[in-house]
Structure formats: C-alpha cells, structure tokens
Length: 339
Image (cartoon, one colour):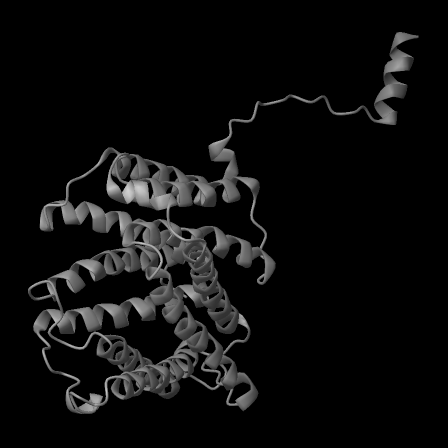
C-alpha cells in the first residue's frame, strides 16, 4: 500500500473527534427530530455502496491475481460474527446504562483499551514489549484521568456506588468491543482477498442486522408511526447527513487499519479523538476545561510516544567498549614476542 498507516490514523482521529460534535449539533431542543436508529443503517449502506464501487473499479483495472476474491460460503459466513458481536454489544451498552450513570460508563469504557491489548496477544499471537504494555496502561490511565471530574462532585461520588451488575456489564461491554475489533482484524488478514470485497461482505451483514433492528423497533412500538422505510428521512437536516457520512467514512478507515495496520493503532486513534473532542468542546459548547483533562492529554501523548518510538530512543543505554577476545594466533605471536 502506498498510503502510510499513520496518515489514515490521523484522518480517523479527526473524523472520530468530529463525530460527537456533529451528533450534538444535529440535536434540536435537547433531542433528535429524526430516528437515530436510521443513522447507523444509512452509514452501513453508504459503506456498502462505496466498497462496491471501489471493488468494481479494481476488478476492471486490476488483473485476477491482484484483485483476489474468495466466494466460498464457509469464508463468507464468518463475516456474520462481527455484526452479531456488535449487536450484542449495543444491547449490553443499554443494559449497563440502567445501572450506572453516563460518567461512570465512559470511565469504564476505557477498559476496552486494556482488553484489546490482552486479546491482541491471546488471539492474534502478537507479542508486545514491556514498554508497549506500559504504554497501553498509560493510555487507559490518561483517558480515564481526563474524564474524572473534581472530587466532591456528584459524578465523582457516584463512581464507586453503582450496583455490582453495572460493573460486570461494563466489563462485558469492554470485552465485547475489543473482541469485535480483534475478530474483524483476524478476518481482514486471514487471506489475500481484496479489502473492498471483504468490506462488501462485512457491510452487507451489517446492513441486514440494522434492518432487523429497525423492524424490531417497529414491532416494539406497535407501528404507531408507520413502518420504518416510510419515515426513514423524517427530520433529517444537512447536519444529520454529515453525521451519516462521517460515521460511514470512519468505518471505512477503520477497516483499512484492520487490514494494513492493527487494533492498537485504532485504539490510539479513537482515544486521541476523544481528547480532541473535549478540547474542541471548550470552544464550541463552552465546555469548562479541568486540570484532569490537561493531565490526561499529557499522559496520552507520553503513551503514544512510548508505544511507537523505537526502544533505543526511549532508554539511554551506556556505551560499553568490550574488548574482543584474542584469537589463538594472536596469543601465540605475543608469547613469542615476550620470549
């Protein structure tokens, strides 16, 4: 690939950071005029169309050896699993929020940083150095520090007062999020299929699962507003469409990183995006910065440098001038000289 992974990671950071801002701007009077469940569906359709167009273009311009496609059903059906995991994860998210408040949930969500590193080692057999493990731990500490509010506030007091079910569900949510990412990376790298064909399979099942969710919502509410396809664009504005395009573009960049980089790069991108969102909120939504936010940013930058820098640039090793052992020939010559 000619595109360097760090360029895609920076672009993903920018798009992810603007995602929350655009979603907030799409609200009206503190709520959504549109059905928010339609946004992920349209984002999946967008990714499906874009991947299909790129696949068609690649098939026309590339030879059969460079544009490899596996049409075996045994391979295709594996792409159902990530969509199923994400579906379970979304339900676990809602269940978790019934036991804990939003601040506690956000802080517990940082567990996915550590669980991603653990699953990265166990399932993908990727070894990390001790410095890299320390960097991942620092990243989790940094993002958590930036989200913890001042002591004495209600949100700070409620952090350790939630029921045990909330903490267990929070851990499960973090594990499911990491598992979905790790399994997606496994699928992307298990063969030499072209990225766009893999995306086509992934987003086809993603679209189907989102349709199933919309139908389930209709049945849950007794079709009081009519079927979902008749009101899919109700309440949409330019900002809402920007949310759809942002969500779809972010998904395409994530799949690129899963194919040509790894989950750890994605974790760093999303974590840095969260901090960038907080900084942008200071100017856009009059968000009051805290000392914890600045400390969290510093810790995350240190973690970023520690993980991706070569080890010799992080530790100053003393230069040792070790004497080379003498050869047998040199010893004999020296003995003759002395005698």
